[in-house]
Image (tube, rainbow, N blue to C red; front, side, top):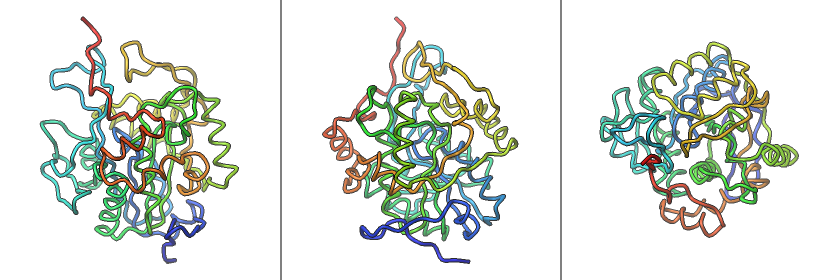
Length: 339
């Protein structure tokens, strides 16, 4: 087996192989949700593909970012979740800490009576999953990734975002709604020695960028050489994600299922207001796009590089604000829109 090549090493540019080549020469892979919520469940589409290519061990995980509902809320009816919680994964119980910035979670893991989506992943994929903290800023999330890589002896890391906002530049006509978490995770990928990839599932289904601007940014990244292949999900893997969303619903992740079933066209998703938002699910949402994270950051997501030296979520929030961005953790956690 070929040894893993680093994606970034002290500023030295190293070209990553295609994702197919990486899969064929890897033994243990970590596949994680990039932006919180149900990203870790959608990431199972990539895990399934890697397994079919011969990767022997695959562990799912994600970052400690959740859009918790109030304890007494009726989902999708009375209140709408607006801001996420960058919660402390060390508060999850039961869990196995790997250090200050990462834990292993089990099927019954919870915090304050609520379960992260990673616990659902643990129930359905091997009995355990991992959660990486965002509270340590860019340095902390990178450290958490390294802790998980070392624990499992992984030689491949794929971080899967759902939607589009990681590809935002900050100059879009409509500001993205949840991109701080995505750019923090991307900042972590930039600091890894293990071969690390950024992947995009459900192209545009988060509705956070106008499709014309998303296409432009994707074009910029592809022209810069960022694309490292595409993953095509199997029908069985799509249906399994659908089953998981019956258990742990997420409005954006559910649109990936529609894309996988070929249900293209206009759809309404309930995210941050009671009227919902219109998103266009098109053929580009069918494959999972895989990129070199370094080139993505160099070509479009430059603000991720600004987050690399941050050491707390508060510092990351202030840095993001200084770049003219709206950090989602500064918003109310939820709003009751009815009198």
